[in-house]
Image: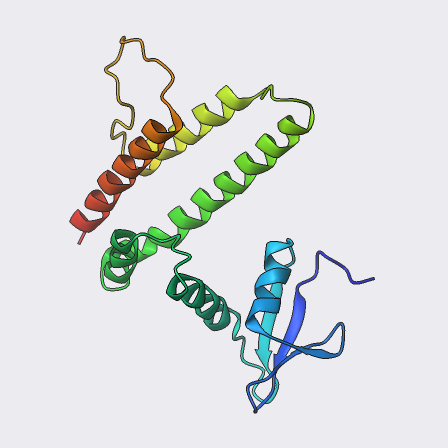
Length: 180
């Protein structure tokens, strides 16, 4: 059995075919996406030069999903990513994205663990507080809440939460754009 902590090594041949070194067979981009979805890290290298091509192929997988209508990245986020490549914000963007996805992954794991024991979600408030503190630190204290200090707030519906998240993301994008 393969060591799941070690990245799955995929070699790209001159013919551009991708070869899974663990199973000794050829794989497609969809196969690689499946490995990643199942939690496996992959490393794709050029057989001849030894160059690491992982980033290139992961971007290609994302582009193919987006072109099929599986839109995860809103156009304004894509625009901001393009801008980040041409501004001084590039030094902050990778760290911000990595931290955001790490927090998302941890939150999803906690939610899945808590749902295994019923619908009660112990620690959810602490998780939300941690995310709010992170966002406040990353945005220089910009207010992300919809209420003023001291005001009571009702728990928003899922649609309202999504609208709030979109608003917060737009505010963050505006702030990143101003860093030019």
